[in-house]
Image (cartoon, rainbow, N blue to C red):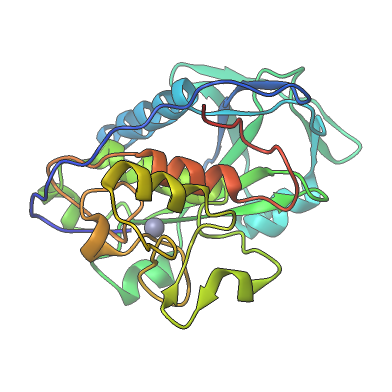
Length: 274
Ligand SMILES: [Zn+2]
């Protein structure tokens, strides 16, 4: 994620609320896996936990999932972990002891339901000195939602000093690690037509936008480019999931929430919005 230093118009805020007859949902509960070699400033750490806590309050996820993550998947995601120890934290001040049985990390009876590995990709950070962080899902079991994600931070970049919406930046990245813009619909044709590159699989976000903004004839939620990882910057401006964050405020709207909810390989990974 890169940042910019302008303020755009205020969009709408989002709410994630309940309802499903079939599936059981629970609050998103992120645990952070920190390799000992990855050091970030206290200030960044504070914002990272604010982002984790905020998303835990507004996102609910399918609870009926596997209760363990194979250690192999963790190492595939972060090869740095092969030669260093790490700790897992449930909250800023709460480290938990995990028993590694049979090469797996157990989710501790639901104490957490998503594991986020903190990493550093020095090569990427060096190539682009405006880059502050990137994230992606690492392990998706079958057609379920991701259980594991990787958040790479470039802690040494000078841009951190000028950027004030650091919690938003981490919220943005964590949404990527949950699959936003990173998990693609198998049928890519469904996402495109001659008029553009669309991010929403099921068109619910499009319907929402047509209704809310009275923009009839909207064919889809336009993405920035063919990678389709972000909302179009020119249209969505201060939305949290555009490619460039505002330095004033960024809004996680129903549009991104619905896209995330429809980002799945099967039904019911994230709780539907009412
Ligand atoms: Zn992004």
